[in-house]
Length: 190
Image 1 (cartoon, rainbow, N blue to C red):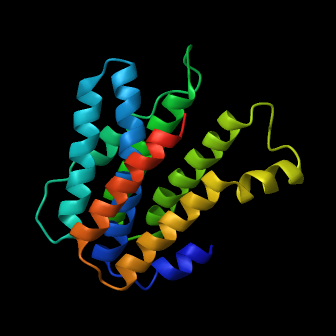
Image 2 (image 1 turned 60 degrees about the horizontal axis):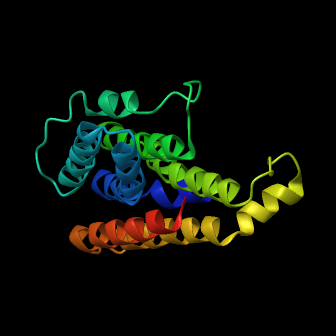
């Protein structure tokens, strides 16, 4: 809810840039999944969708028709046999990309907040992968996850991105940092 209060006064370009940064951070995890399942087209297409979000955030005219639906279609079904944490991360990445496009299309800060939520959800999944047996059934388990290094790192990353767009930092700087930190995160998360 606090994030929404910070996103609401931003213009459409800044909201979209924030959501694009969230999606950019998730790309390395999705790319790893695409390589694991032998789907280079997925890796390429999701990258194109995120690039389109950056382009519209910078004021370029992009035909984003169908990109939101394409990103949504890339979310792996949790009910599929052989579902893995990698599929979960890939789903978060695809959802973040879809929300970035939807943020541009609607100028609704809720969609930008949902893009950020994908990072938080992926961090929670990473915490569960590192701490098998937890179930978030108790307040103590929820607190332990929230206080974990991986979740706190995700929260800090989205706060840095929000500050960058609020202070009108160059989009190239925001994108480069999101990409670099996303790669570092993917290397650390299993």
